[in-house]
Length: 420
Ligand SMILES: *Cc1c(COP(=O)(O)O)cnc(C)c1O
Image (tube, rainbow, N blue to C red):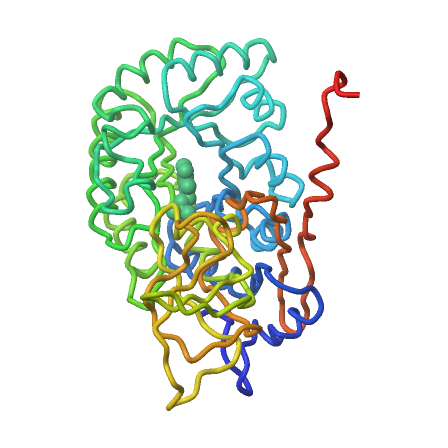
């Protein structure tokens, strides 16, 4: 359930009229619905009920501290992939003992930060990383629980750039070599292998790759146990896809059923790292049409939002649904348009040849499903601002990140001292 709908002819986020936010802060901006975030978390939690499961929200999907706090207050843990995300998770109130640290290239400083904060678990992706962690932990006189991230060599059938579980991808340790790495780890005094981790990709819209990868993991656990290794915790990663276009996607209940079928009898603690599923459809990007331009063969709606604000269409060929803040009416005259931003790149295109009710300059649009991998990936390309983020709850709204303007950024630049 998503709390963006038309009421009295205009788009509302929960009980707040979106155009009211436009009047107060101007466009473009991200708008998140806290209740939608909570509901998606609960959907997943309910689907996993009966399992010893911890849901560690993958902060990289949307790392605004207000978003993290919304989930912390629901009892979520966090999956972090950098020191910066660890700082955010702690600041937003996630207990250290519910934080796991993933990522293929954690630096010594990042490993030390995780050790200092006594987080739950570090997911290790290579032998050099394992040795480095042991060295740092030893110097700090600590012992940390570790899961080895396996690369199961399963194709998640998602976009190439967000597929992470094939043998040619940089992530994890080949599943066929896990035994060797575990036996290496057992010789190290300052790491304790508690289990295995896996994350095969993002925006999975079919369950089969999950099932296949889970079965591979289960087989591996059984083999390792036969050889006397204790495996008590499994981190199953994230990846559950959402609908960007209204077409059905797997439900958390279907996903939960597969998890139960495969893992119930193993008696392992389970960790899940959902990102997109929780926040993706909880956010919209609100933007104004600057110009309507009739080109030689296409009609362009030129927005004040651009690829620097929302990279996904350019980066992943993502198709986000785009709607007007004014409710469309039966019998509206539809126009076929390309929806583009003002940045000097042809890739700055949100949609091509879509049908929208006739739009004029000054109208407002919402780009839907922009809550995940939206604001977090934005840049200041073309010296544009980092745009505000707003959170709505019931009939309240609050700016949870102010606009960061070029003036602010220029303050961090200077001429070399030899230019007088
Ligand atoms: C990105 C990532 C996730 C979250 O993926 P979603 O598709 O947003 O659920 C979880 N775990 C790891 C290790 C990741 O890199």
